[in-house]
Image (tube, rainbow, N blue to C red; front, side, top):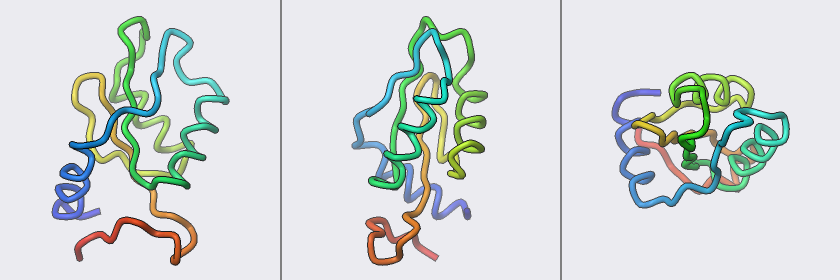
Length: 98
């Protein structure tokens, strides 16, 4: 992903509300599966890491991206933004700049 594409996705993510919260149980298989399903439906999602979670946001973002085959757009404090294009070309909602 180029820096121009990342900047475009950051701009889109600015208006998104977090749809997942990761708490004290950290990353469970259920959370990972739910994030994967959300990425397939939305392509770009925002996640909040709660204060009672002992892991830091950057490490959670890297593990989630690896498990869901997505890319980390940004991590700011306890907010994570992930992107994965839809597998079906006709269902893609976000057109990245070249």
